[in-house]
Amino acid sequence: MLDQRSRTAGSTTAAGLIIKIGVLAVVAALAVWAALPLIAAGAWWGLALEAVVVAVLFFVYLQRRAIQLKYLIPGTLLLIAFQILPVVLTIGTSFSNYGDGHRVDKEQATEAIIAAGVQQTPGGATYLLAVGESAAGDLTLLLTDTADGSTWAGTAEGLTELDGATVDPTGRITAAPDYTVWTLADLNERQAELAELAVPTGEETGIKVQGLSAFEGQSTRSYDEACDCITDTANGTVWYADDETGSFLTEDGQAALVGWRVNIGADNYLAVITDPDIRGPFLGVFTWNVMFAAGSVLFTFAIGLGTAMALNRPGMRGTKVYRAFMILPYAMPSFAMLLVWAQMFNRDFGLVNELFNLNVAWYDGTWSARAMVLIANTWLGWPYMFLISLGALQALPSDSLEAAKIDGATGITAFRKITLPLLLIALTPLLISSFAFNFNNFNAIELLSGGHPFAAGDAVGGTDLLITYAFRQAFGSSSADYGFASAISVFIFLIVATISAFMFRFTRSQEDVYS
Image 1: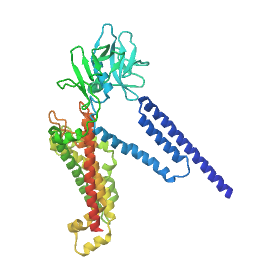
Image 2: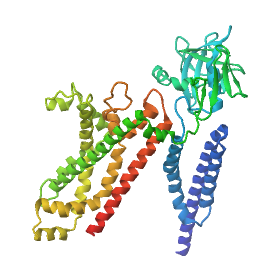
Image 3: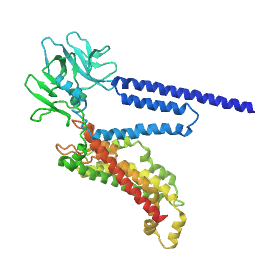
Image 4: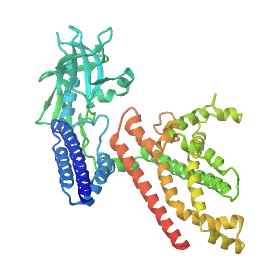
């Protein structure tokens, strides 16, 4: 019996050791895979951080001690990677001018400005142009030489011949191995990114993009390190570097096409407070954001609690069937349901107008659009409130309710003074989390209304929340401003954290009263 137990323990240990070796081998392989692009990019701090993480993992899991760390390390690393690091990067970006026109460093910006001054030289090569992204996400010019039909990939490093490309009857590249080719719509929307790309072919020559074609030529611009300026000999324009704004400026303040990323301090935050063109829309969006989140919580909780109380009656028949029907909206994918609701509010053929014989252009008016998103969000959210309210009602102490009945408290009085306060003690944390979720409910706004209605020339929609406003600043407008969008994201975090802290403090005071 003892020998059998020993063999069993030994086999278990051997199996565990094999699994441990396999897992650590996968970790080592992933580390090597991640290290190669870091080395290529010269990201030595990232490489050092990766080395430290791998060393800690091997140190912890190759010994029999530190049992607690073996359980804590995976969760801690995931917390740092997916929670703390994104927050730190967002805060760091919020103090910069990162965005269209300021995506690169100063050296790359200088090269791009010089490349923009390229003029075609006699006999220079001409190309049919397509634009794409490499597997690593690098913007690339996909070029077809009009003289011999050869295909080339142009990056900031220069031209490399491209094998295996597919071209259309005109010779333009439509597909290439390891590249995603942009559509014409992508090309029109992302001109700012394309303008920042400089493709050198020699010390003084480069590729110049012109519509859907490109050519090789020589630049009329040159950089002078002594004055930290760029001179265009064709028209005599001189741009001087301004390291505070990350731009090359002429003497009258005209900026060159491309700037570089710099730290601008708290300018993005101060703009929200001091710039009237930003402050007004921001306060309007913030006010509606609070109304939307509070209204969603209030309506869903009122309807959910009401239905829960209606079904929480002893001896009531068919309660299981009723509950099954009531949780259907919660069981359906919200993404699909939001799209369905968006069509139901269509003015011409929507179910809502047809059913109630209305002719309301829900998306054209600010308040009608806001009512629409609140109605749809309430329908999606109240089953959750129904479930948690029903569970809380069934968990209420029966002695308190019986004592209230003996004292003559019935109906509304018993609900207001006994049932509701006891429910709020249990449900307030969930209501706070629901408020925080709806405060950042990007899907509800983007899929239902897309932020509409928009006034003429206004970048802020009548139903925009702060999260959709930040998204529009970063990705949805003609020019991206990631620094400002990151500052808005930090504001959102501070607002939600402050409101949540206040509500949790209120909850603790309620617990003290009714404990």
